[in-house]
Length: 135
Image (cartoon, rainbow, N blue to C red; front, side, top):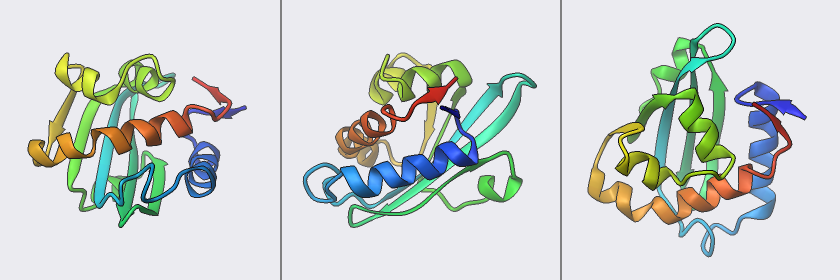
């Protein structure tokens, strides 16, 4: 079991995405980069960044951490929310679209394009949900 948003968790997420998802069928050849700003992460209530980038459905980068350099990534979308909301998205309790609609996360970026990638993002989240994770 790995700690949610740890380096080990990110490595397992990369392996799962690369081995279990088809870039055309599952990820719809998505071109997008997302920076998740996860606030109030226990036990210190710090902020952790979770960045990933897809080019033509290929995972190019997936990193996590509290390092400010991650925050500086030139992401097409920035999603900001509380740790508990991101846990619910990652464990499959709620979808990313529902979290957005209910105002539990805030989205910065082109909202029309965001709508076009909700399915591949939910598939991405369903895949990483399979990681044995300690929240």
